[in-house]
Image (cartoon, rainbow, N blue to C red):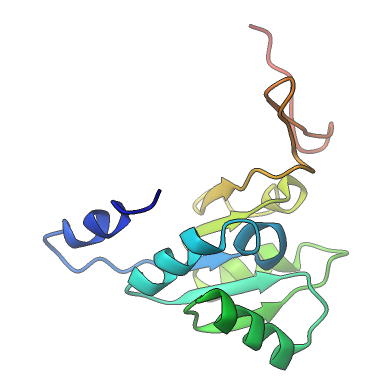
Length: 140
């Protein structure tokens, strides 16, 4: 499925650096093969920014088992916009998360990618699930 991913990175003529951030639960844990290959090939800082309660040793072991290469694990407070603050402070330019509630706080200069999961996507109706806070219904 991801056999062409390395071609994306070796096709650049110039050295491109860009810091990325990844959520752990529901993002890395949902697509570990993809994120393992992405982080292995990435030539800049990779931050794991998570709301998971901080058990660094356990989390490092899990990330190692999943084959994730990273710079640091950042533990954010679930009750506020601390993920967005960490993204800004670290200079993260691209961020993946499965929770749109937290992506809305991220500065518009950051490319954000929503990871699809059973809690945010209805496969029967082929629709993402949002709240009034995170989405706006557009008229077709």
